[in-house]
Structures are given as structure tokens and as C-alpha cells.
Length: 343
Image 1 (tube, helix red, strand yellow):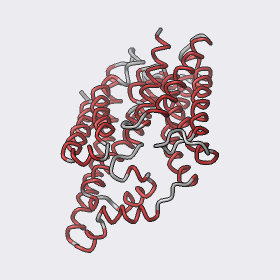
Image 2 (image 1 turned 30 degrees about the vertical axis):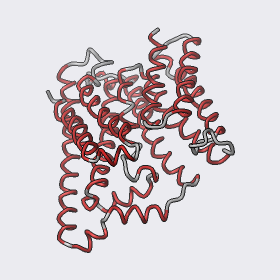
Image 3 (image 1 turned 180 degrees about the vertical axis):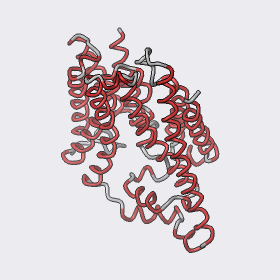
Image 4 (image 1 turned 120 degrees about the vertical axis):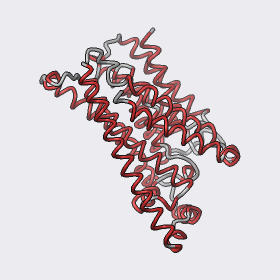
């Protein structure tokens, strides 16, 4: 039962997110944000339901004692994080309500006006946003490599662990820790901006204009990786790198070299579209060969997985409107590759 605190936190985020959406339903419908935000709420719910099975799915022989340690340590870390956030938000609420000047300075409408005045949609700004997404992805590869090294030296075996359980334990702690921080920050930003600490208000200056009235893209991006914790590691790795790396390549090439609009109602370009498709195909080929030991399949199947992921990526880039590609790309490309693998 040591998994319960983490599952409850995740389900709690789901409930609070959905309540927020329902409370602002009319506004969300008018701005076309409903589908995307409901997807975020449901992803929190699904993640909460799946959490109790994540550490042992690929490690069925892991002793219950070890499994309890992984659950307990994870829950303690997240409860501490929630406690720190609670104290921070209460403190900022007190100092804001005591001083009308501070409260006036922390008005979100004024913050948005200043944000829009200083907003620049250039390549330099885009680099910063994509680096954050790539950092999220790099955690998966860093912890997997660390787990592989420790496993090969027989160190993990001494603690009744293996590469999957150890690597995913670290990945989940960091990944979930980030989305807990982002989502509580977003909910306060959108409802009670005065509760946020100064460092959080400054951090939001790096978001996109279209994120001013909704959640940051980083939260659904990480949540969308969760189902693939149950897939072989190469699929999980490919999903993460497609969503961050291929998307970043499409964006950077599109902004730097793009001259032909993909659609009349979109800022995306044909050049970026092609770059994203090629990147997706190459990522799958490279990842499946690099981590072949963990999912040995034929060259034909690898090619079919790469082709499937590429076609799905391009279709999403071309037609997705109401749900973020940070949700659709990992989920659809991931399940597409997983289906090919299982056939």
C-alpha cells in the first residue's frame, strides 16, 4: 500500500484540473481549450491508476520488500514536495493579502499585458523552450545508461533490483516531480496568481503566448510518456525522442529555413514538416538498433515501425488542431510502433 500516496496525489491533480475546467467551461469552450485540458486531467487520472504497476511490470521477480521500498521512497519525496509547495503558496498568500501594493503587482492580467509587450517569436526564444523538452527526454537516457552500467557490474542485483526497476524509479521521481511542480504552478497562475513565488513568476516568462491561458506544454508531454513505461524500453525511448527531438527539429528548421506555409491557418512550414518526418524515421531506426538487446526484432519490423511512426507524426502535424501534438505525438506514434512490434 506504500504506492497509495503517489496515486492519490496524481488522482487529486486529475480532480482539481477537471474541476478547474468545469468552473471555467464557457471561457474554455470559446477559446478552444476544452479538449486539450480535459486530456491533461484524464492523463493524470490514468497515471494514478497505472502507478502501482510501473516498477514491477518488467521486473516480476522483484521481492515485495524491495518494491515497498521503491514505492515508499517515491511517496515520501512527493509528499515532501507537496508540503514545500503548500508552505510556499500559503506564505505568498499571506504577504500578498497583507499588502495591497504587492497584490496589485501580482495581477495576472497585468502580467499578461507585460508578457505580450515583450514577447518575441524568434529562433533564439524557441531554442530555450525546446532545450527544456530535450532535457526531459535526456533524463530517460541518462538513468537508463546508469542502470545498465550498475546492472552489468552486478551492483543492482545486490539490492534485488534490475535495470528496469532502478532506471524507472529514478525517471519517475524526476519526471513526476516536474509535472507536480508545473501543474500546481499552472493552476495557481490561472486562478490565484498572487500565490506564486517570484521565481515561478519569472520562470513563466519563457512560455509561449498560446500558453498564457492554459497549461504549459511540458505537463501533457511527460504524462503522455507514461503508457510506454509498460512497453519495451526502445519504444519508450523512441517515443520520448520523437516527441522532443523530431518536434524540435521541425520547429527549428521551419523557423530558420521555412518559406512555404503548410496550411493557410498555420504557422508551420513545409520545410519544417519534412524535417520532422525525416527526423522521426531516423530516430526510430537509430534507437531500435542502439537498444536492440532490449527488443530484438527483424530489420523489416524496425523499418515498418519507423515508417508507421513517421506517417503518424506527419498526419498529426498536418491535421491536429484541438489537442496538442505534445499529447497526440507520443500516444499515437508510440501505440503505432507498439502494435507493429506485437504483430
